[in-house]
Image 1 (cartoon, rainbow, N blue to C red):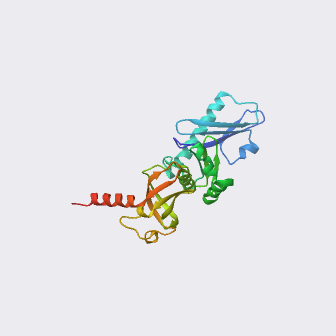
Image 2: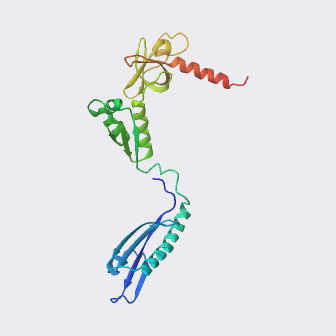
Image 3: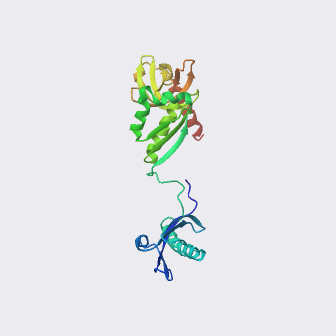
Length: 254
C-alpha cells in the first residue's frame, strides 16, 4: 500500500484525584497510565491530520474541552516523533525493501492451470520448494504468490509466466539443451515446454554433427519458426545468429 506521508502515533494519559477536581494529562509514559491512570488515548496521524484513534477509559466519559486538549497534546508529541523519523528517511520509499515479504497476483490462461500444477501437483510443489513461496491458483486463472522477499517472488513469477506463456512464432527464447539426436537438439524454453532445433537450423553453413555445435546443458538463444497443429515447436538458432550478425554490422562505422 503506497504511503503518502510520514505517519506516527502517541498516547495521552490522564491522572485525576478521587473527585476529578484536579487532573493531569501526560504524554505516553511507557504504559504507566494504563495501570495507575484512568485513560489511555492513542492518536495517530501525519502533519496534516489524524488517521486513527483508540481510547481506553476508566471514568464515565470525557467532555469536549478535555478532548480538544488531548488532541493538541497528542499533535505536539506526534510532530516531534515525525521530525525524528524524517531525519532518518525524509520521504516514503518508492518501493518496499527487496527483503520485505510480499504478496502479488498474476493471471494465466485457465487452460494452462493443469500445466502449472503438473501431474499430481509435481510442478507447483517443485516451484514452491525451489523459490520458498506459496502458490494459490483459482479456477479463473488467478495466481497468488506469497514469498519472503522480492527475489523469490520474481523468480517464481518469471518461471510461471514462461511456463504458461503461449509460444508464438517469431519469439526469441534463451533455453537449455536437454537432449540431442542425430537430426537435431531439443531445447527447453520453459519448464515442461521443449522445442526441436533441426541440425540444419543450428548454425550457418553445413553442420556435420549436432555435437559440433551444442551439447546437453548448453544455454542457447533460439527463435520459434513454427508451431504445428499438434503444438510441436520448431526452433532455429541460425536465425538468431544471422539477426545478431546483421545488427552488429549495422552499428559498425562505415
